[in-house]
Image (cartoon, rainbow, N blue to C red):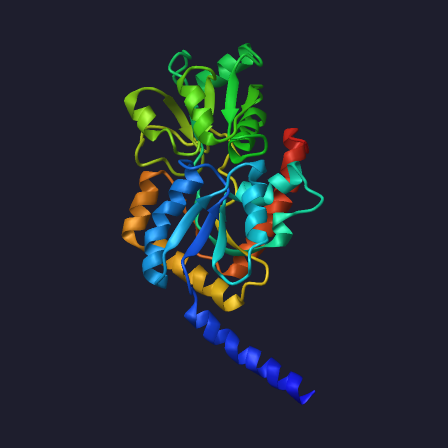
Length: 319
C-alpha cells in the first residue's frame, strides 16, 4: 500500500513538469480535409507562430476522406501525449455524426475540444452566364424555374450544403443539390459552368474580382470590406444562413488538461497577432471569439443541439 501511494504521488508530481516541458518533439496537426481547402490554408497560417511560441515545429498532415472520419479517428487513436492534434471544420464534428452516423465512432465523444479558431463566410455566387444581377433576381428566376438551377457544395451535410438549403427554405425556392468531395472541387466545376449557383466559403474572392463569378450577397450582419457594395443576407431579410460551427482544434481523449490549456493559450495568442489576423482576413475568414477549452465544449454541445432540430427542418436526412 505504501509503495502504491508513493507511486501515485510521484505521478501527480510528474504531470505538471511534463506539461511545462511539452512539446517534446515536433507536433503533428492532422487536417481532415484536402490540401488547398479552407481548413488546410487556415491551419498553415497558424503553424509558424505556434512553432515559434511553443519551441517545436508544428507539421500539417492532411488526412482527407471518409466524411472527415479518417482524420478524426487517426487523432482519437493517437497516444495522448500532446504530440498529435486535429484541425477540423465544425460541421465535421457536430453535423456529420448526425447525418453519417458511425456505430463505432463519434468525434463528439472521442475527442477533446481544445480551441476554436475561425469561422467561414457564406458568399452567394452565381455564374456569369446566369442573367441575374441581384439576389432578388435570382430568387425570382428560381421561383419561375423550379429545380432548374443547380447548386454545388463540399458534400452532403457540409456548411455549404446547409447554407444553400437554408437559403432555399427562407426564400421559398428549390434548387438542386450537386455534392462534391470538397469546396475546391465545387468551385472548379462552378467556374467551368457546370453548376450555376455556389455558396462559397471565401475561396472565390479573386474570381469575383476577375469577373469569373458574380457575388450577390454575403451571410451575416456585416458587409465584406472587400466588396462593400454587396448587401448582406440580413439586409435582404434572409435569415439563418451562416457558415456553420467554428473550425477548431481537438486532442485525443486523455491529454492532460495542462497541455490542452497551453495549446489553447498558444492558439488564442496567435489569433490575436496582427499578421495572422490580416492573413485570415485576406482569406475572408472570421476570427472566432476566445474560449477556454470547457467553453468550447459547451459551445459545441449547443451547436449539436441546434443542428439536431435544423437538419430535419431542412429535409437533410441521415444517409
